[in-house]
Length: 325
Image (cartoon, one colour):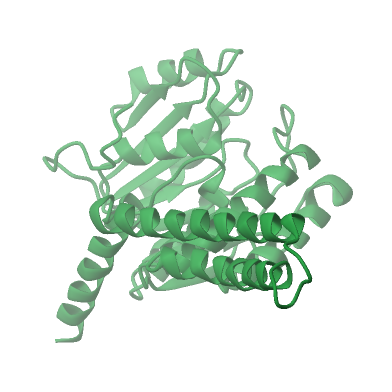
């Protein structure tokens, strides 16, 4: 898959792209296509459907490919192996040509009939519309409770109060989502990532159905991944513009503590040189120097590296100014 995150040309560009990652959903893929086809045809906008087979071991790809052969609106992308929901979603977005991109799960728990609600909300000027499964049809212990805790944590840590970060049913302006880096398990942190660019975010209630076929791909095993990604997001949201400040805040106590230990281990505060105190103090100074050097390196990477967030923020500001005039 290409990593350019840009649309593949603008000739006959549709208004709407619907991206659906699939993994071992052979029993759902045909029903999902039929439901999507009814809804998007009824909207009346030029559209495309993009199914991304994330290395399924069943007949998901074969059934999706057969559907695509009969409908030019449907395109299918296939991974050679299972890479995860976020890479599959990113690949679909890479290949999407629509001005508005809608993402959703392929297990029939998201309802395609909600898509018009997202488009209506986008028409109000929002850049991202997030679905909220307010009546979620999932298991209490393994899905609902961990999700509520995760959403509360994400809201507190990032400052973006989204009720349901894990809902894949979302709508984006194409230029917005392409400016947002997606990797690891970051799809559930998209609102927090986009908040770096000052985009307008809305949340709407959506329907949620119990899974009819297949098995859920998620459980308690993903909790540690969410916590690790949350640390990354907190760092990005809080210190993306000045990484040296963050590492400096951690390094300052080490400098003070190291200096105090060295003074305590040298005359006149000590009768003789305490090599253990002086050595410990030097270790804290070395730690402080390492942290500060990491911060300086982060500054260099930020200033000379990938500035897509900054570029998008400028584009979004220009677009808002044009709309106001």
